[in-house]
Length: 217
Image (tube, rainbow, N blue to C red; front, side, top):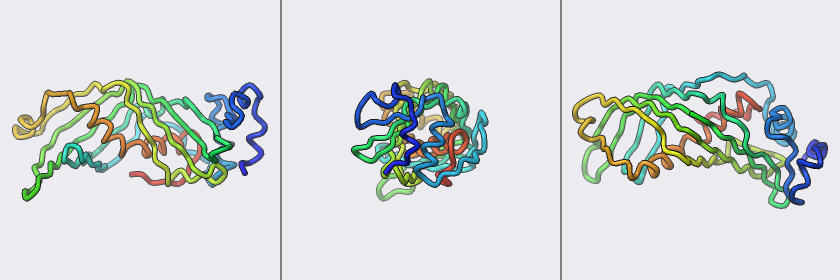
């Protein structure tokens, strides 16, 4: 059963739907922290915010493009500007849901592309990329709402608007490889954020709400 802390919320927040409990106003991060901590083992002694986060090495797969991507010295910008856009407990399904919106979210890295082909060695391409996403919307459904384990959950990322980006190829081979055809860019972005989502949400939780002790690097 969910901790009784949920019952202290204001009626205007709680009673919109009988099975949905919204215990906090979305701007009240302390209230969200208290509710998550009461229903998990997350630590409330958080690191505090910073405008950028760095990852020394990050790899993700893009099966649709038969490629693997390795990013070195990845910098994420404006991560401290993400805001909670939804938070509730569903009493019928025993789930908790947390969504955040990130505006003008920046990614910059030295990227290596490994393009795979049957019966061939990988083709290797390298370039520097600097991207800005006007909006990212991240949503995590958390099972077992009275004993939440965020580290085992998946975070879905919606990309409503394509990023603005600048690419600097490292060599002529890469320059020839890169395409100006943007028709499949949404497919690429969905695949890359399939890997990024949980790490971004984890950073937000660790620095603004409570630390579940996850490592998504």
